[in-house]
Image 1: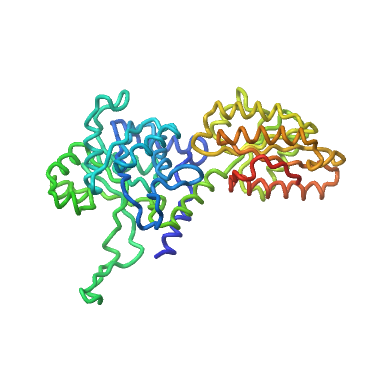
Image 2: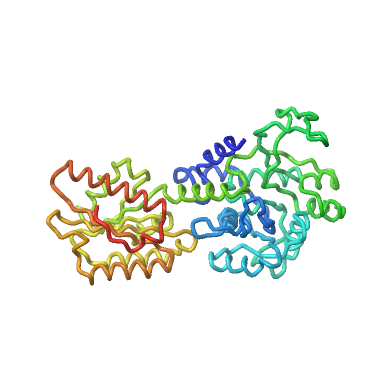
Length: 439
C-alpha cells in the first residue's frame, strides 16, 4: 500500500501552489466552470498529529520555511471566488496561528477556537461563518461551505469548482478515491472474519461541500455521540437531512500528510514546484544575452529559462511569476544592478510566501583574476548585500564564470554552471547564502 501511496504523490506533479499549464489554458478551462455564488471554507486544524511521532502538530510543521497549514490556506486564498477561510485550532494554538496569518499575509482568514473533537471543531467553524457582521469586508453568508483538512495542501481549483457546484445542486458533495488495499474484518481473536469486494467501495476524502443550510441542520440535529465519535460529515447530512451526497473521484494530489515521511514528500513537491523555471536578467549586454541563449539550450539546468534585459516596465510581470532569477554582470564587479534588482523583488512581495533565489553571475574574461583573488572589500560588499537580503527571505549566491574562445571549454563551463544552479535553486540553502564561487 505504501508503494501505491508514493506513486500517487509522485503523480501530483502540480500541487496547486502555483498556476499550472500554458498561459491562458487554465483560465479558459476554469471559465467554463464558473462559480457565481458565495463560497467559504472551514479548515479544522486542532489535531495533535500523534501519528507523525513529532512534538509539533503536523499542520504547524515547517516546509521550506513555512508551516504546512499556510500552504493549504494559500491553495484557497488564490481562488478568487472563495470569499473567506475559517481556520479552527486548539485554544492554545490561537496566538501561533494569528502569528502565521500576519507573517505570511493571509488575507481571507479568520481563526476560531476548536472543540474537543473534530465534529465540534467543524461546527464551531460553521457557526463562525454565520456571524457575517465583523468577519471580513464584503463577506456574506455563504451559499456553499467547503470543509477540508488543513494537512491536504495540494488541492486544485478545478476540483474545488466541481465540489462547489455539485454541493449547490445536490446539497452535499464529497471527494472519493479508489481503495488501494482490500478492506477486511477480523474476529475478536484476531483472525480473518470476512473481506469486502474492493471494486464496490471507495475511500472518502476531502474536500467536501455542503449548502450552508444543509450542514447547519445536520449539526443542529446531531447527537452527543455523533459529536464525540463521528468522523464523516457526509453521513450526518444523509442521516439528519436525508441528503445523499454527490461523490466525485478526486485527483492524486488530494493525499493527506499523515506520517513523518509525508512531510518530506510534501516538501519535495514544494521544491519541485519552485524549481520549474528561472528568469535571466541580462542588463541588455550582448555577452550576457549570448550566455543566456547557451543556457536555454542546456538540458542539465532542468528548468525553463526566460530571458529579459531588466525587470522594469514591460518585463515587470516576470517578477510576479518567477521565484528564481539569474542576474548577469559582465566584466564588472559593480553591485548596483544587483541592488536595483533586489528593490524590484522586494516591491513585488513575492518572498513573503517562498524564499526567492537570485544567482549573481560575474561573467569575466579568462585572463581576469578569479573570485578567490577578489579584494576583501569586494567580497565583503557582496556578502553584506546577501546577508541583508536573506533577512527578507531572498537568497543570493554568487558564481564567477570565465568566458573563453575555446568552444569545448565554454560548453563544459556552461554545463557546470547549470548543474550548480539547479542544485542551488532546488535546495534553497540558507547556509550557502553570500558564497562567491568560481565555476
